Image (spheres, rainbow, N blue to C red):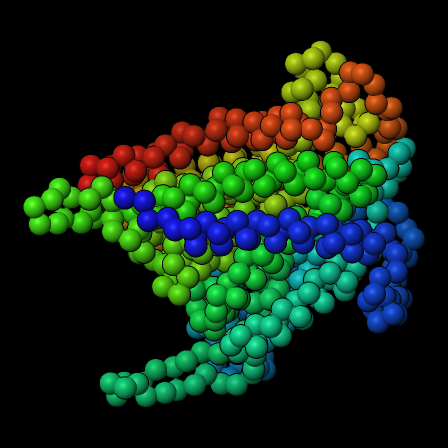
Length: 578
């Protein structure tokens, strides 16, 4: 029985329409910001921007070589890691700690520092029972801004590689970072933090509230600076919740309006960056072609996700008097869903958050039906390039474009090129190296965790679902997403260490070859288009890139997915549950 509704499909269609309408104006604004042009915020923010450069000794006219750009990013990231680790370890002695939170353990401090540094926001802890207000504000929230800004800066470096001719540099990391925070992330986050407060999110520094329940019991209601954390958690595709239940919690996601806005904010900057790309290379249609690839893959996830969850679990089919059992679970699969949002909004949120490397959740992914659980898993396995994290989605997609154009060149027997830049051995090798780093981490760590006692001790379920819990975890951290099949108990030295390493590999070992490709492309001259030039704004180009992404992902991950969600689905059809 199909329990999808017209209302559910309309909500999904409305979301897609608003995202499309938002892409061009936000992309135009961001293009002006990163080109150093005057915007409506310049009178207020330009003096502050200049002051930051003076204090930090930054020459905003300096054009950095890709190695210098990469070194600046790595140094900044390492410093951020050390500071955040220190804040957690000293938490018990620092102010703004009304709940008396103790110092965070060394292995969890390492895991959390790498997590927020890499824009992953994987949380192996219960936030409202572990982190003080100071740690949330000065540690985690700050990293939500700067890790997102770092992703945007890196995407700009690769865009300049395609846009520039015979250039030695790809921009200035410090300038890109500063402008991303000042002109993009901070203003939008302030506006939406105020909207979230209006809708019911707390924003205070008060101690937790102790109340007596109607049954006479005692309850502690956690609160704090939630709205400000929530806005940048979503906008920066960070995903780390102030509360353990994340965006299913009424203080983080109070209403249907905040739920819709959170879904939209997750993809807004990633979508707008495709327009930035088109404008910077001098042809907006190039940006729309990339957007189309992402949107096709988005639809390929959200449509089956909603349909599968709406059909429900056949093992729970309803029996009626004098009738055969119905084919599916009545009402669809509501297990693990927040009743305020239901199946449609849960399916959209699940797809969006794993397309966007965000990791925020408004439902329990561990409760998804097997094939519905495979959708977010596959979204992340593809490199979270379907709009993706702020910046990381675009540069991940452009790496696949390089591979797709290489394949096209092989098919027609000529040197591949894209936007007038010939794609030679170095660019293709760097692109493939960056892409293959991800499965090395995902499949390698999963293999280890499924055979060692410390890995098996963390799973909550046996059989294929237990395997899926492990596979999902390493897919999530390597893709810098942070969501989880939360049946996995990950706050152990083994998982805190291995998952932390997975986050590091997924972020930095992908970035370096990507920047090397950007530096190589920036040096090249632009070759005029000829009759043999492959058109890169056509449906054929969109189909080619989509096909290369799906084939690459299938060849790498299908065996692993078969051992988890596919086997579990087959067992479920025979009413065997795990």
